[in-house]
Length: 336
Length: 272
Ligand SMILES: Nc1ncnc2c1ncn2[C@@H]1O[C@H](COP(=O)(O)OP(=O)(O)OP(=O)(O)O)[C@@H](O)[C@H]1O
Ligand SMILES: [Mg+2]
Image (cartoon, rainbow over the protein chains, first blue to last red):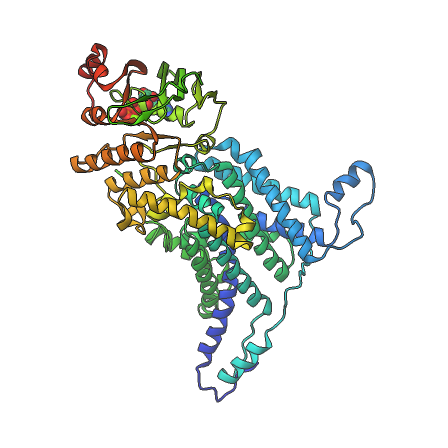
């Protein structure tokens, strides 16, 4: 809605507020992807490059199941010369989500048993390389299983501009904010997810064991914790977080391969928040989300725009120079 | 099982039962280094068994074999009357063997209480759904385990630091928290790798008292590595002496002290 001439609040400030709110919502998604990274990194010291692809894979699997797509249809048709593509049924979104969670747990188990188990005790760089391989493999499998065309995802989350916010802000500022309902729901879901994860880590047996493994492998073994069980668990939880991120992003922009690129945005988020800090991932995500939107709004016009492409990385670079442990990471003190 | 009713009573009135743990012809190599060379010995129920020897003798390696962290190339481990199949360290822990480490291994991100609580993980049986949906049972279990933990915390006199993050504790207290975590598991066999290393005299006295009391009050069978001969003589019922991976002595503290091979090993090799 247009800004009225007689507004008492400076119009730049009102715009900036709207931009900030939208940035916060975008930041939620970055935070979720970063959260998946942190979970795995804390528990196993593995920097999981495949986290973004996991979000893509989860979203594609969800759409595929909901639409009753036949997995590996192209492959099956190529081998047996058929023309199957769909089973001819659709699956309710709730059931499909539960099934997708099952697939992500299976994926976690496979990653542990076929890859990570054989790399225990290897250098971090080797583990990192393994996850790069995993990312490409998973992307290929996703393509082969569900096809590469862009799909729409609708699990019933509300979408469209929130009228209440629009009207309320119009009454206060004489300018209605455009906030998408989907962003609001996404924020609430992300908050619930984080609260759930914290409760899980604090109060359940498996959560305690997970924290123990994150702190010290030897000590964890000595109290009877199976590391490989915890790693499957952690990859499953990361897979679940990836699914939530995938649902949000997919609902907003369609399920497509560019989804895995949000993983790259998670990198600067991690540099800000620290690789081992869950609050860091959340705050870092929000800062990057707000930061890049505000920067584009304030500075963008002066430098010809498109600052969102590089702002996060420059900010991360500054952090690398001045505060390499991130906002919340433990201070790095070289032992001599 | 042959030694099960072969029990005896010590001077201070503790009962020592049959063999709980028996190491048979253990050999452990790291590449060219032979850390343990064909060693056999046993541990009896209720006793305090010391393993001593100069630096690099293979003491920690032996403890690591018992707790499953190292897998020997040769030899068998017998626990409670049966031969133990190849096991991972966490499986050994679940059988009731708890341990501490030479270089303290605590969960630095947790409080003292939470660290000690992890010793109870194997006693928590409710699954994740029960914990989420059926709080009653899970809470009862939590309370039960908390009681055991609080008893251990009182016993080791660390009530004052219950809520302190372990990373902030001084060295001596860290060692005590590690002991608390191991005791919380109510182990059938407790392995202590140099529980008093780096401590001052007063701290050593406290730690000795705790070890003796744990053995006396809970009847815990203990195998410990220690360099301080005075402490070893005071604490242990029987001593295994190692040098360069070989067993050079085995017996009561008095027997070992008068063993020529042991005397030579200690005079010939520097130790701290
Ligand atoms: N994981 C390992 N890899 C390679 N060599 C090892 C390993 N663990 C122990 N060793 C070697 O085995 C030998 C015995 O070491 P161990 O730690 O058991 O001695 P120790 O008696 O505990 O000595 P200390 O009193 O110094 O603790 C040493 O030569 C050591 O270098
Ligand atoms: Mg040692």
